[in-house]
Length: 601
Ligand SMILES: Nc1ncnc2c1ncn2[C@@H]1O[C@H](COP(=O)(O)OP(=O)(O)OP(=O)(O)O)[C@@H](O)[C@H]1O
Picture 1 (cartoon, helix red, strand yellow):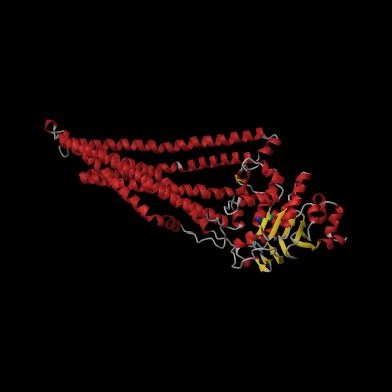
Picture 2 (tube, rainbow, N blue to C red):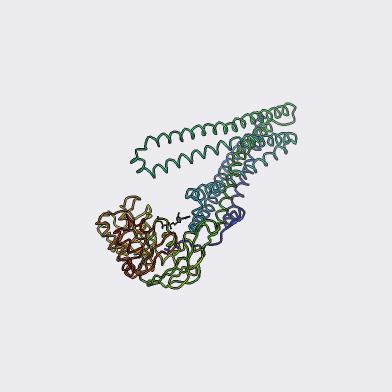
C-alpha cells in the first residue's frame, strides 16, 4: 500500500481556477458516461412521447365497438406496457448514471479541494475561519454534486420532454400547438417571478439554521466553562431565542414557497380546462377523433411535469453557479510558500542559524509594526536553546519560521548552512518536528494517532516509541494495545504531551521545536516528561520555549527575546555567571513562570 504523501505547496498540481475550467477538468474524463446519460435521456423522452400515440390508437379502435379489432387492441395494450416499462428503465438508468457522474466528479473535486486547502500557507488559513473552509469542501461541493447528478437528468430531461410534447401538439394541430406554447411561456415566466419571492426568506431560514447549529456547537465545546460558571440557564434562554427565530423564519419561508405550488396548481387547472375544451370542441365538429382528444390531454400532462421541474431546478442552478464560483476562487488561491530543490541530509542533527531576520504578519501594511526585528543567532548542531521572553515577544513566531509555516520578511533562516527557502518543503517538514502545548489528537487508534496513518510504520515501532517516552504502563492497560481507539479528550494534559513526544520519536527529526506545557503537572508526570524530553533531545538540535527553570537548566544556550528583538543570546553557563544578564536575574528571581514577565519586561 503506498504511503500517503502530505500535499506540499511546492508540489501542488496545477488546479483549474475558472468556472469553465472546473467543469472541464472534472466532467471531461467522464465524457463517455455523460454521452451515455444523454442517450438514455433521449431514448426515454422519445418513448414517453410515443405512449399517448398508442393510447390514441387504442381508444380509436375501442370506439368502433363490435367491429373493434381485439387482437390489435391487445397488441397495443401490450406494447404500451412494454414502452411504459422501457420509460421507467431509461429514467432509472439516467438517474443512476447521473448520480454516478455527479459523485465521481465531485469526489475528485472534494479531494483536490481538501489537498489544496492543506497545501495553502498559514496566511490564507488565518484569513478564513475553519467553518468557512468546511462550507467550501462540504456545502459547496454538495451543491455541485446535486447539480452534476440532477441537473442533467432533471433539467435536460425536462427540457427535452417539454420541447417534444410541444412539437407533438403542433403535429396534431398548429393552433393547439401555438396555444399550449403560449400557455407554457406565460406559466414559466410567472412561476419564475413568484419563485423569486421565496429566495430571501429561504436564505434567512438557512442563516438561522446555521446560527442554531453554530450555537449548539460552540456551547458544547465550552461545556466545562458554562457548567463551572453556572451559566446554563442563560445559555438555554439564548438557545430558545435562537430557536424561535429559526421557527418563525421557517414558517415564513414555507409560506412564500407554498405560493409557487398554489400558483402552479391554479395555472395548470386553467391549462387542462383550456386543452380539454379545445379537444371537446374539435371532437364535436368532427375535426379530431376521440383518441386524439385523449392524446391532447395526455400531452398536456407531459407539459406539466417538465415545467414543475424546470422552475424547481432553476434555483438549484443559481445555487450551483454560486458554488462553482466560490470553489473556483479557492482553487485559484496560490500559496506564497514554495519549496526549493535541495535535500537535507537524512540523518544526524543540523545547525540552525537566523541571519538578521525580520518578520511581519502583514508585510503589505508597512504601518503595522512587525513581530521580529533583525534577529540573529547560531545554534550548533545537537545543542538545545532555551527561548525566553514575555508574552507576545515573538517566541512562537520565531519557531514558525524554521518549519516555514511563514517566511521571513527579510534575512534568512539556515538549517545545516542551507537557506530553508532552498530546501524541498516535504523534506524540511520531515526533518523539523514541532511539539506545541496544544496537542492535536484524532478520532483514531493509538497507532494511527502516532504514525499519522502511515502504514509503513510497524506496531512494534509504535510500541517502542511509547515505551521510550514512559507510556509503557499506560499502553499495557489498553484493551487492544496500539489498536485501541483513542477517544478525543480521554487523555490528561501530561499523557497528551508524552504522546506528542512519541510521535516525534517515530519521525526521528534533526531539529525539534518544543513549546513546553506552561500548566503545572503533577510531580510524577513532570518527572516522566523530563525523562522523555532528555531522550527526545539526545543528539538533536532543539529550541525549547521554556516556562520552567528545570527545562532551561538543560539548555546549552539561552536566547531572550524582548518585543521581537534579541535582548540576550549566549551559552547558558556564561549568562548564568554574568550577574548583569537577564538570565541571571531570572535565576535570582527563582522561577521563570511566576516572575519571568516582570524581569524580562
Ligand atoms: N497569525 C498571526 N497573525 C497576526 N499576528 C499574530 C499572529 N500570531 C501572533 N501574532 C502576533 O504576533 C506577536 C507575537 O506573537 P507570538 O505568539 O509569537 O508571541 P509569544 O512570545 O510566543 O507569546 P506567548 O508566550 O504568549 O505564546 C503578538 O503580538 C501576536 O498578537
